[in-house]
Length: 118
Image 1 (cartoon, one colour):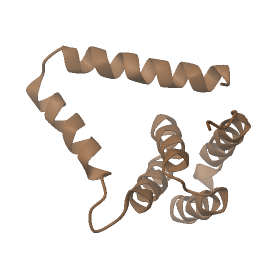
Image 2 (tube, helix red, strand yellow):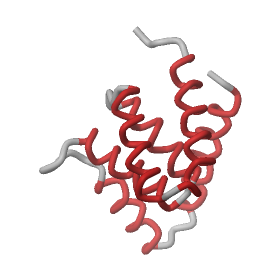
Image 3 (cartoon, one colour):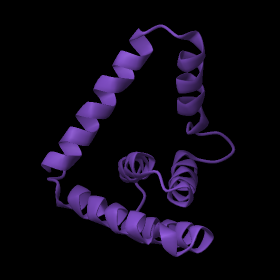
Image 4 (cartoon, one colour):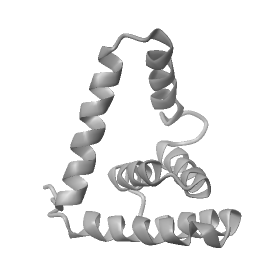
């Protein structure tokens, strides 16, 4: 696994555990709500992750973009589907999204370079 990707995943998990261990009820509720928002319902998980990805691109949040690119790949979104979602984020967000698009594509390349689990 690429070092940057491993560090991202480890830091995210470590800090989420630290934050939740602090015991703030409202933070715990928000984290629970956030996780539940992406579960299958009227929209399937792939569609919800793609929505989260495009919204994150428009908001220009690199951590959120990375999270949703990773999740999209985990739930079976194709590269072609990701590129279409990137395009929607770019169209809605404008040229200021281009640096985030570059980092999203670089992450996609890293994910695609990882050995496939059998």
